[in-house]
Image (cartoon, rainbow, N blue to C red; front, side, top):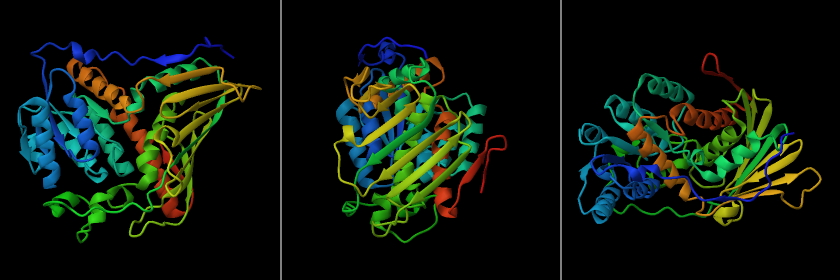
Length: 398
């Protein structure tokens, strides 16, 4: 087994080279879906030198007005505002777009943004179905645009350092990764709308349903728009596993779920999934959003079970335990700036790549792998059996 220097990794943060850009190298960004997560990431974009948010688009009026106010407060200039994303994409002053809409819109918007010649930062999960993912991978291959999927662990120094531990061989052969995520959303209340919403435009490519505030506010828990909490959080978890294990798409996925306890939604809150990989390991992921609430630094953990050592990694720390020394870590790593900073690093990587035209840390090809796993999880739940992914033919076999 290869050895590794047993020092404490102190995550000082990756160099944000984007800050070196010259004043005439400004990137104009358009934001599609600046509510919730979109507002957070938009704020990060605005924090970097020579980056301006010049356009915003939302079909929910309060989100649009809040985004306009936030941009003007940060920059002193009001952005152009649109209700139709196609109009934002037609704006020739926009160089890159942030797409932070519900999942069911990602596929169409990314394709349209690439066709319009825009660089793209799109939130995860990348897409809603395996077929959409295959089409997006082909579009990326045919495009000259820079694309980043919001899998921020790919830019996070904590995960980059942990990947080096695995690569060095300190764990020995890893044949299983065990992961869990715990929280509780059963008693969450749905806020009433505070302004005008274009419900027809919001539904877009999804099946037509009567207006329901819960579908708008909690779209992640409805199969019309997303893959449930197992997809929302599982895409991140499986991407981190793929990253550290240097793995591709799974060969087979099997899953089981508990009953649905949140009224009205059609996706379960408690799921366990097992993915089999050609790299000769299993990844087992359990999510339970009917558990107690944890502090964010304790709500998620991944354990890489090697023959010689085990690596535990969560949001802000990792620890390595050697054979016969399960109580005292022999190697530790910690992010000094916390998990939220991973998104800052990820945005910085995207902006640098927009300027250099180099590949990002999370292109569509990798974003699809993490989306595919959770899509296979949901197909396994739907059909009540294991499902296979035919990598050669890029199709699901049930």
